[in-house]
Structures are given as structure tokens and as C-alpha cells.
Image 1 (cartoon, one colour):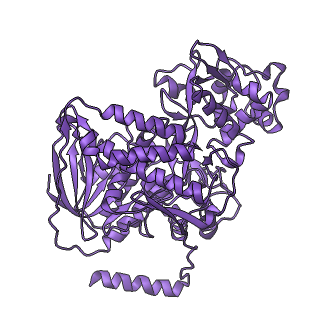
Image 2: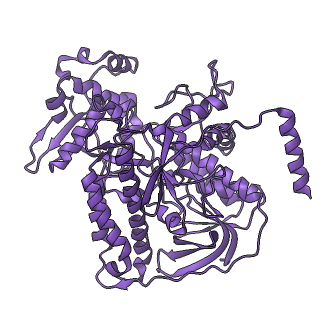
Image 3: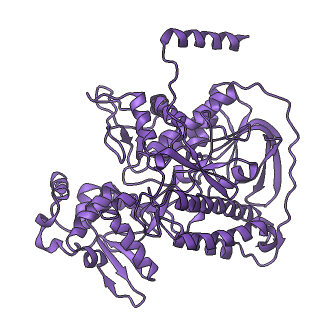
Length: 599
């Protein structure tokens, strides 16, 4: 392994592999991918009922345009105009690249890529390969990277991005097997480590996903919109989103107390209205404060049961209360959907067999038999819509540090379903383009002073479990200002005295200790952003603050929350750019770029 590279890419998901693949094609071949585990991460190990990729419409007679798609992304609130325009303009290029690499998006016999409507989508821009779309993307991009011989440095946890005078000089990492710490010199880093999956106890991120937002924080980058998340009902034994047909087949919702007594708590609270709201969770999966009198009541009632100390389950073996009088009691939308699906019969599991057998097989592959077992659930963190502040090239405020995918703060308050997968490709491509245009400079000697980790009886798990549990209790979709303030004080103390408080059992736990440190750094920033947003914006998006109604001061569209360390403030978002579109001008510009490149 070399000691210096032009660019280190951290992460082996959709964004990381695409960054490496694009850099190589642009002629930047002195690169390597650093990863904690090549087969880990969200891109490869998660999905949903129908995992969506969002792009410009490419079928049918309905019109669409780059500017219209950009306006859709921008209108979600808290989104920078340049990011919205880039993600719309590059969407077709990135999508077709995946098609050429073999990702099996469906098309008709004439080559139109079929689309459907997703959440927050006025068109039919969404497409999918099924529940494992991001896995197929990752595998296709990985094949391309491996075919080019790009070096992958596996089993290495990045523990610090090294800088000098505000510029990247290298990366320090810990070997996840031996605990050995080493340093690599580089001029650029592309951080593609996904969202901060480790900060919550109740999460649908795969157990192999941890995130590394703390690397950017410690390097000096600011964060944007870290209070903006998506939460929804998910299974906990095997972490998976329970959207789509899992809800549309109308399972029973059961609460079981410590004595083993079960009750259908949704029916107790909502009567026959519970049937329609369960169905709507299929479409309206994420918690949304605008729907607290609608489908998001389900999330609140589930969370309340768990806070009482009960365990909550979905039961596909029997019909829910209210359906004993037949399907005519259903709202029109639910009735017609089941009718068109040929599923106005039987029990939830029988309807699921008819509508989506793969949904049953998925759980069977993970040792869960939906034909006979109850499925334990919680309202879980699923996606962070905030991340590291980046410019139009996906470069952070630290020169040479680029961030792409969910780790980048480009999504805002509401985003169309599937726009995150598009963003992995657009952000990493923009970063690669920008790096390829830079001239290589003399390498600076990276400086790293490794902190001393105390050894003894390991307390990593105990500390992690305590603050993850508290984060889910006071700072998920149902937020308590007093609870978040108390937790921030605890996390701040842990951050300041981390290397005095934490103990590892042996050197093999070195990488795990730095993983915990990253989690503490990130929790600190997230809590700061949440408290700032609670004070200045109040209830909005996925944040129900002290159970107060929405609409306090600011419209979320007009601002974003920017966090540096633990200091957060509201900043205005940028407007949509109005770039040059005159063909002759752009043609002349392109000719000059080509001439400059030859010279």
C-alpha cells in the first residue's frame, strides 16, 4: 500500500464507488477507496418495499424539464438553489450511466423508462428495480471499479481527516482487526460514509452502517439542516422499512405489556378509522407533522405504547378489528386499491402473498416467518436530510474535502422519495469533475498526534447504549426541548473528557473507540441544530416539538440551520441560479475548455 494518493474516497456505497469510477474516467488514477468494510453500509444492505430512484421523467406524454424538477427539489424547504439545479440537470446523465452499467431499471419495448409518483412528487419521475435498488447500484458500480483495478483499502476505519491551514493533507485510520493506526497523505478526500446511523437506538439503518460525520466536524467543516430527518415504522429484529404493501394489506397492530397481555391499541384509539390510516401508511410512510391528525397518528400511538414499556408488533396472521364486517367498511381509496390488486379476501398474510410475495421472502431470508410470527416494530430514524455544508461542487468549507451522498447536507426538509439515490450519483460526479480540473500540488506532510486510549474493562457498549437510547427518547420525531438540553449537557461532558472517560478492553477495540467518538461529535451537533430549530422554527417537517402545532416564526423553505461544533444558527438559503443557456455562448465556452486542456 502506498503512503500518498491524489484522492482518498471514504466509503464503498453508491456515492463512494461512483466517485472513484468517475475520477478514473476523468484521468485521475492516483486514487484509493478507504473503507471500514467493503460489504457494509446502507447502500448495499438496506431497501424498502419498492426502493425508489428519482430522476427527470423519461416516458409518456406528460411534459417535464430540468427547471421544473429543480423547483420540486427546491420547494421542499431548506434546499440551496445550486444543489436543486445540479441534481435535476445531472439526473438523466447519472441515471443512464447506471443503466449502461447494468442496473435493471424497467423499460417498455420502445425504450421508455417507466415512472410512477413518489412522495412529494408532482410528476411520475420515480423508478425502481424493486426493494434492493441501491444494492444493485452498488454492485454495478463496484464491478466497474474492480475492472479498473482501483485500490480498495479494506478493514480500515478513518479516524481523522488531517488538515493544515484549512486544506486537506491526509487521512488517519485505524485497522479494524489489529487496531494499528496509520496515516496516508492526500490532497483530496471525498467523504461518502452515508448518514449518521449510529446516533439513535431506534433506527432502520443496517447494523453495519455507522456514519462518519464527525470526521468533517473535526476537520473544521460546518453542517447544514442536521435537525431534518425522516422517521417511520420499521421492524427492529431485522431492520427494514414497513412501507408499501406491508401496510396496504392491513395488518393488526398489537401492543403487548410486560405480563404478555395483547391489545389492538389502534382500534381502541381510532375505531374503524384505524383501517384507513394503516392503509395510508403504505403511501405516507415517513412521519409528517402535517399528518398528525391523519396517518401520522399511527406513529404517535406506536411510540406512546413503547414509552409505556410495552412492545409493539405487526400481526399478519389475523385481520384487524373493524374488518370483521367485511371490506365495505374501508375508505374508497383503500377498497379500490385492494380490489384492483385482486386482494379483497383473506387475512393480511394471504393478501401479502397475492400482492408482494417477495416481501414475505425477504423476512424469511432473515429468519422471520410472517406466516406464524409477530413482527416487532418501532418508529425509527431512517434518513438524515442534513449533513456537511457543501458548495455547488460538493466541496466543504475545508479545501480538498468533498462530501457526497447522505453525508452531504443537500436535502432540506421535504424531499421526493428516491432523490437521495440520485444525489449519491450527482454529488460524487460533481466532486470528481472539480478534482479532475485541479492541478496537482506538492504534498504536505500530514501531521497526526494520536490520542492515548485508556485500557481496562471496556465501557464502549455501555456508553453507546445509554446515549443512543436517550437520543431516541427525547430527540427523534417527538422532541422534548428540556430532554434535548439535558442530553446535550451529558454529550458535551463526554466529548470534552472523552479520552479520560472511555476505556477499551484491548487494542483491537481502537477503531470502535473512535467510532464512538465520531458518534458523540455528531450527536452534539445534531442536538444543537435541533434546539436551534425548536426555538426559531418550532414544529415542522418531521419534528414535533413538545407536541406543539406547526407554524411558529420562519417558513422552513427560507432558511437552513448551520452548525459549527455545537453552535447553531439560521441562515438564508440561496436562490435558484439563472445560468447562461444561450447555445452559442456555451459552445464557445466548451471549445475554450478543450483548448485549455490541450495546453
